[in-house]
Image (spheres, rainbow, N blue to C red):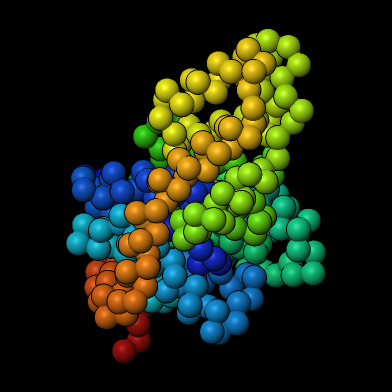
Length: 330
Ligand code: TYM
């Protein structure tokens, strides 16, 4: 049995990228492995939420995890800030994380470009906190999307460095994981790049039918194939990538053939894609609606998860303190 862990930042509602990049794989694994899934609310502080938003975002994400199919009886589901042990491990790992390597990560460079007015130290050390999240539970498999590949590489580096420094095989080196081998990248609707919370190009699990139809019908396309069997341009390849996760194989074949024959009508493809997304999302959305009114259930889940996760985390911290050389006088 392996230890599996994943998490999502609580900076907004969950979108299809989160579902197909992380949650879907995790759901399959929760019945067979020792699984942890958490809400990264410390990480959400890098974008400075107000106190009221912070809590309501965490509540929303917890609701959506459960609605999507995470099972609190099988997996340990918890809120990151309920485990102060993670913050302690983050502090300790920071002593062996170097500014140069942190500045070179693509996600940091992206943030510097996108939010130059708020380049805080939390952003710089984001991969260290993420490593602490993972190695505190000695997780070996981390189901994530393609965008997290580099963060996992950093987590391995910090685990290995600790082991090397203290000449002990203590931390496990975690691997990014997907059943189909290749990590998933779900594209957005704007013709380029991945679906993301902050890019305004996403479809959320809580979106209404109307919102989904509107977003999909507005998705960027091109002027159509100019000759038979031409390659997809990026916006069209993106629409097919979305179809790949929500539509029937026969539907995908139908539109691929009509593209190859230059008879495709993007309006028809988008209508079909919107209906297939709605079909996928609507049962999850109904459960979100139900669970969001059940505060008692949400507190029970969060409490149970925190208690279980803390047992493990505090054992790790106790051992790490010993390895590093902290000794009590009393
Ligand atoms: P976050 O909140 O940006 O995304 C959460 C998960 O969703 C995946 N994902 C995608 N997968 C495919 N296509 C997309 N367009 C897409 N967008 C998001 C991400 O790969 C991720 O798996 N740093 C993490 C949160 C985190 C974490 C961790 C994850 C903190 N500590 C420890 C795993 C282990 C993040 O910001 O993900």
